[in-house]
Image 1 (spheres, rainbow, N blue to C red):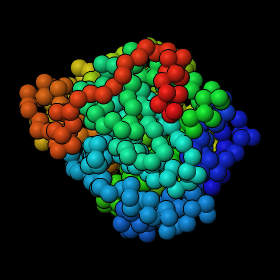
Image 2 (tube, rainbow, N blue to C red):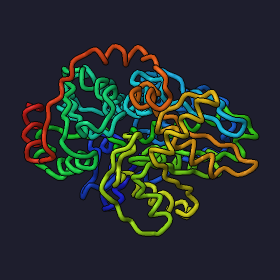
Image 3 (cartoon, one colour):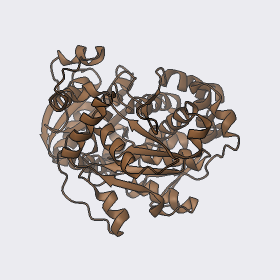
Length: 427
């Protein structure tokens, strides 16, 4: 598998290099030079989740890793289901929260850990990642206890839910968490600064587990196929998928699934009031505004990292950006939608509710809608309980970590301070 830097096309790397390196020169994202194509998608959909995912990921990786190795990686990473549940006659939910940290990022985080272990040369590795909520827990649990790997996770202090924070800031060991006095975009900017620092990168074996890492993105392609396998053939023929979008890795993976053969009629990018992309699709002008905290905090992102990959893919496939649907939802509308869904018999959380609302507004006659539920409602217990007037019980993993002590350090959004901390952790 060859990948190129979409900012500097002459930089070309293998899958293993891309996994270990994370970002290319000039903070460029890696992208596959060639995409596999599956002509007999029905036969692929007839397979079980692990077998199908192994086939898809082997086709991307090529002869760099054997099919047996890839299957073993998938078996270790995907140890939980991704069920599709009926919400209305015309709309279904893809539930991606049945993994160990109750969020969709378990798929990508765990596959990246397996990928890094498979391509590692046993040198020292420091994983640096920023999280707006769920990435932190998925990455922390995927890499917890792995030898020669230190993980440093930055998150905006006070801007993720208390239970999200407890799930990854209580582990200790090789997991180091830093509460930044700033926004997620500040955290993300410091991660990029670290990758631009060649001396630091070499000294600590720097890598990132954000969705900028291609292995995470590839893993996410697989659950779009898993969702389609659970729908009827009639539903698949006019399928519209709504994706709750923050950093836009999830939508990138969905579009890649379509590019390699999954018959999805169209996608809808659903955001909260941090609506840089919906406004861009409407006006053609890229004008990020200061990030606003919302009920759907994992989507509180004004400068989504993965958007350049979407533009690159659309250009290569000959797709117009105007083919993408989009919509933005306020907190008040999110709360209204959560209540309506609950009254209709489905318990959701803010991110999924946003995707459901935009999908419901834009779905046409004869189409079947699928929206992604990216986290368990209990991860947002405080807001969901208040909106619904309910007391949602905590699943086992959350109950366990809720009682544990936070181990985070606090820092300002200052790269020099972070650099010093990284050198100390890696030493």
